[in-house]
Length: 61
Image (cartoon, rainbow, N blue to C red; front, side, top):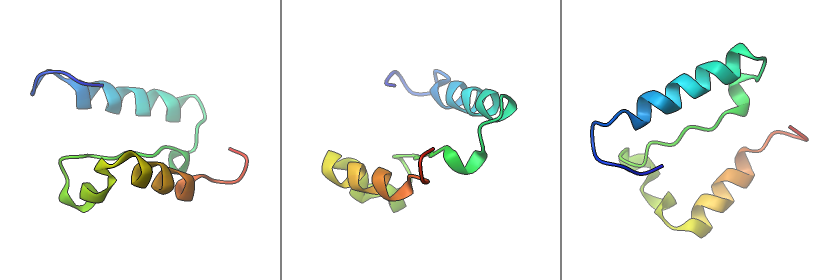
């Protein structure tokens, strides 16, 4: 999702995460990445992001 700063994008994602959890999705099945956090700096390249996401997958879920 993209848009202007302070428009509520993060709030929408948090609400969606809460809805997923409320409907039975385990929280450990949800991956959240804040690209403004420098610890995720290397994930700005799609190949690195893809590899990271594959590592986070849990079994068949």
